[in-house]
Each structure stands twice: as C-alpha cells, then as structure tokens.
Image (cartoon, rainbow, N blue to C red; front, side):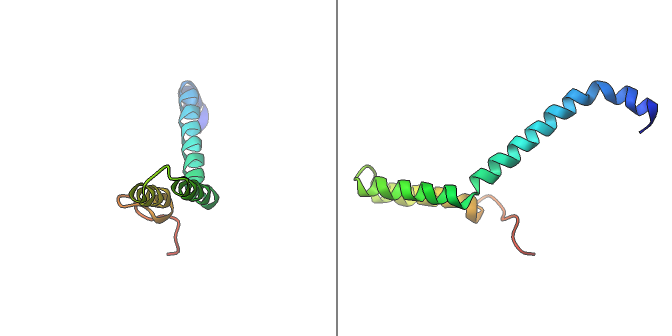
Length: 84
C-alpha cells in the first residue's frame, strides 16, 4: 500500500467502515429472512390465525406464499446458494 496510499486512504477509513457495517447488517438480515426455523414459525402463526378464524382461506394462502418466498427465491428473485 505504501506511505502515499496510507496518507490518502486514511480519510476514507470511516466511510469504508460504515459501508462494511452496512454489508454485515444486510448479510445478517438475509440470513434471518431465509432461516427455515423463522419461516416455520411464521407458517405456524398463519395456521393458528386461520384456525382461530382471524383470516380467510385466501389470506392464509397469500401469507403462506409470502412466508415461503425467501426459501424458494420468490417470483423476481433468483435462487442463490444452491448446488451448481
């Protein structure tokens, strides 16, 4: 990197730190969103709401589909992390 790179790169260090922090937060949020245990809990909540009569069949189907989208890749989202 050298002395010149260090001198000119030093003022950008806080910006790089904030960018990396944002990337870490995004990675954690995506991990939690795709966590099968969290999806299962959401599906159980939807089933309980339907059993209690709080939502209709159509709402149940829509909420189940929305809960499963992170695992299946959704309509607009390509599947990642699968076998090549």
